[in-house]
Image 1: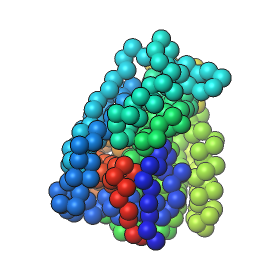
Image 2 (image 1 turned 90 degrees about the vertical axis):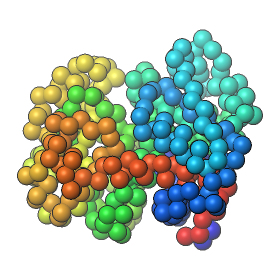
Image 3 (image 1 turned 180 degrees about the vertical axis):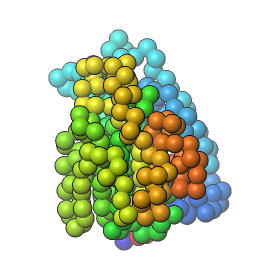
Image 4 (image 1 turned 180 degrees about the horizontal axis):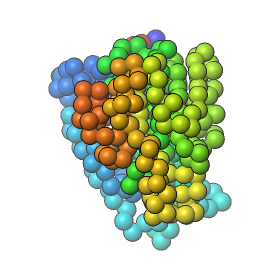
Length: 345
């Protein structure tokens, strides 16, 4: 099957077909093996990719800039410090500035594609960031790539799976443990959602562990359950930090995320609340109960809270491999959606 996704927006992996996901991963692996191969280095020749950052980053900005450069193009950084978002009856607009309709149509004339990063601290309500991406996608013909919004992070999810496959091969029937951990950052849902969504699509068993009061949005959990049911796999929820680690677990994703009332109570209160749940941490004792489990995390890691240094820096950790894969999955996405590269799967 020849996969062609030229012009397609990539906002959430759940909106990609499984063959499209497989094609992106296949191309990413080929690009990693032949990083500066001649067939890739001019795919974006003389083209500009825009990067719209409402929130700062390390891996995201550098990996997208490097991706554009290695494909022969240029990535331009945009930072809308003076812009604020509001919800209106017809979508999301930029207050005290242009409407998205006007801005998007102009940007469409300049660039071959655009990435947007907008997290929970830049919006007033859950989902506003994701809505902003979709409003830009509505008015732009060039592909929109989600560089992390308040709901989803497709590039991270794809990179997680790529790293997991590199270390343990076919993921079908294997079990991933997604466990909450205490932390000092009050992290958003986006990376957690994407890992749950894409691993369940790939035929994995999913175990979700968290203390009571830290439920993830119901609509996303229903999608994960449905994915598992379609594949005949298990989806479990556990509220005990010890019972979650069992002999069938092959991957452990230990990460803090804020509670569902975060937008009402704010970051300071959330951090104070989470800091009391110190038993929720990934450590070597727990990892030893797994099936040679590997530690997965999108980074940055809140060491000593989400995970111990012994695990994060030890032989069980594949976090740096996954971080490297961001470059390659993003190159594959840009090559297919912008340059129109087709992949056989």
